[in-house]
Image 1 (cartoon, rainbow, N blue to C red):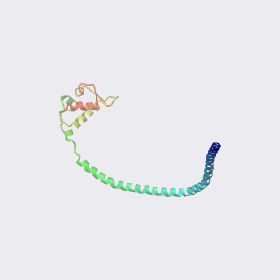
Image 2: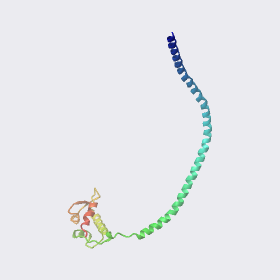
Image 3: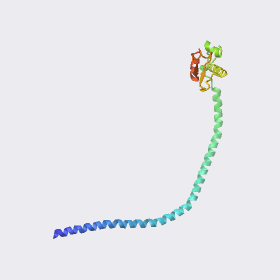
Image 4: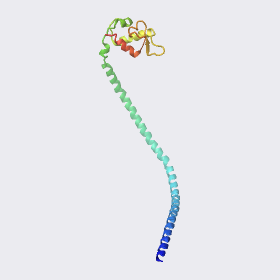
Amino acid sequence: MAAAKKKTAKKASAKRKKTAKKKAPARKKTAKKKAPARKSAKRAAKKKTARKKAPARKKAAKKKTVKKAAKKKTARKAAKKKAPARKKTAKKKSRAKRKPNAAFMKAMTPSAALAAVIGSNAMPRTEVTKKIWAYIKRNDLQDSKNRRNINADEKLKPVFGGKRQVSMFEMTKLVNKHLS
């Protein structure tokens, strides 16, 4: 009999625990539902007061940012007014000191083939290039479809190494071979 009482006691305690577990969450749920309702009224009141204060805060913040921007603009204008005077004097000095490169200004004598196009006088590379371009434009030797290419005529063919058409970049390379 004692064993039967123990079993029934265990069953009864197990039932109590199960019912206690089931009831406990129900109480918590009801407590949670009531609390937010009270808080929501307080929150709504806070939001109303915050809405009233917000425009004033925003206006004050805008005024501060406008003042800061105005200060920055005046500082920039003052810096711009001072800076150009310094830059202009610096540019004048650098232009006066600049000298042409001696390698470009060295007089070169053209070969017989090149002399037929530009003349036989000794001249710097820059002048040789200018005279060749003048000849090309005078005789309309640039390709009509691709303006980077130059079509050779009877005088330019020996300068271009016998090629009928040469690109601008290749032309300078070929002309340099005819200068000494």
